Image 1: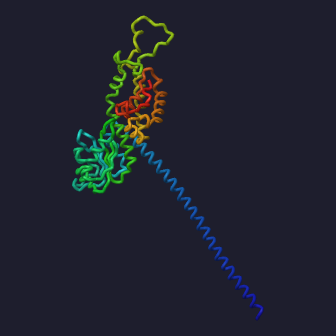
Image 2 (image 1 turned 30 degrees about the horizontal axis):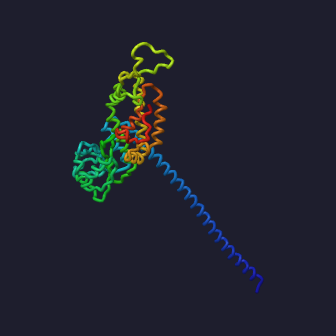
Image 3 (image 1 turned 30 degrees about the vertical axis):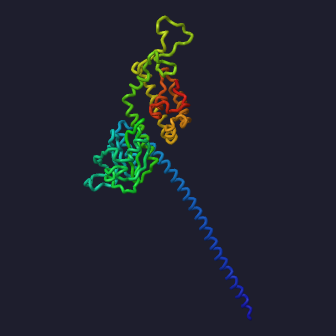
Amino acid sequence: MTPAAPTATWRRVCEEYFSRLIEDLEQGVESEVESRVTAAVEAAVRGAVTDAVSESRRALAEELNQAVRRLRQATEADDVYSVLLDVTAPFCEQAVVFSIHDTQVRAERMRRPVPVQALDGAASASLPPLAFPVSEAAAFTTVLDTRDPVVAMSTPAEVSPALVSLFGHKPDERVYLFPLADGGRVAGIFYAASRVQAPFVELLAEVAGLRLQTLAQAPAVATAAAAATAPAPAALQSPQLVTISGSYSAPPAAPPTAGRENNQPRQHKEWWDLSRQEQQLHLAAQRFARVLVAEMRLTRPEEFRKGRAAGNIYGALKQPIEEARQKFREKHMNVSPTMVDYLHLEMVRSLADDDPNNLGPDYPGPLV
């Protein structure tokens, strides 16, 4: 064997060893790179998803805020119907706003993305005449009786033959009916179908109902205030009655003067006898009270429904009611000697259906 043979054999062994070493190194590098890239991509995706969710939530909150603001700014019932149909567009594809007229329901506004052939190519937003007796639709009757949202199957017996024909509903399709509650009655019904996001639609329908109630009461604001401040007959007056006085009580140390006014209770004023500044204070207090009560209904709808059903609204909403009473006391009750507890009046009207007993046995009563 020549001397070169061992050298060649050793060189061959080294080459094979280094070849395997390089292959192992390359595989290790590839595995490490793949692992690091995968981790970076997953982290980026998680961050992007988190950012997207946060942005979606912010966008949704802003969209709902804008919708509520538009509904509150509506100046008449027709505006409420139009705005409600517009702001619910992202949350349902098909919708009708119905008004209630005794035993009839009548469509006021409609959104129907798919044109109906029977209308000769009319635009989907057009409103064909649509009215039918409530007795023809069991779901509508249930809404009027319970004043609660109803989920129904889109059959002629449930939603009327007219609606099934107009929208081309399939028998197994679900539809949603939301009451537009105007105080103690249902002033309208919002009918939604096709990809309905019920919680958001219900919230906006609640706001629309409250706005309709406010508009219905607006012409009588001055009359109601005057009635609330009118003096009661002497035989009916008691320290618990809420009254409006036109002047401050005399200081205790002041000596009485002659005249029969000293033998009478505090002098009362009619609404039109109040100064312009006092009237503005009262109107601001009324608006503030309506906002506080509306917030109770919107933020805690389930507790409110349970409390109203049990005749104990205060028991179900004790915390928000006490917070509202404190806010109203600090902001309005101490600013004028003529102030009325409009918060109590609004809770009786909007929460208790004009029956103070529904507020419950533990309700502390008016602030004054």
